Image (cartoon, rainbow, N blue to C red):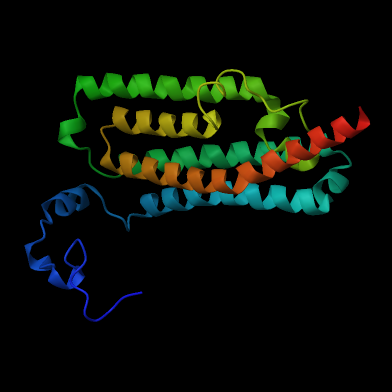
Length: 225
């Protein structure tokens, strides 16, 4: 509870801040490289936000109703079809990401060989995480097969899952970061931050569900034994 007799908080309170003295040079410099109303930038933001929303909504709807499996007469065929759509959406997202970078200026301090080779290394690391995740999970494991009732014997814990949680998402994020560094693009760096934030929200939504599915599977197996 607060009291009118209390003194200012540890920061002096917002009323004690003189916003006229704020240094806006950094923000002004960033905006000089970025036009947030550019159609390609808007398209990139929309595709980045839409893709995880789409596959989570559709997968959760399928898990609750089973309508896709019934429509395709097979949960595997339904999962393959959804996976194909997700791949196409990801291609569109990458295209919009690239076009947004190319339509806006480079940052001089990033346009050098060191940043270029750093971008190559980060891009390569991202690709390793994405591909190794795919090979560890398989197609159905990668593309939400657990929502279709297609479960593995246990959750995958081999590389790259032994190194980092959700390596597919973080590998994708690293790939975009490397791509942005290769292009010396502040727009690409900002869009990479958006990719990371969207994935973090998706993880918060997906992880409890996945954990519960495998908990229930383990419980059923224990009862049968």
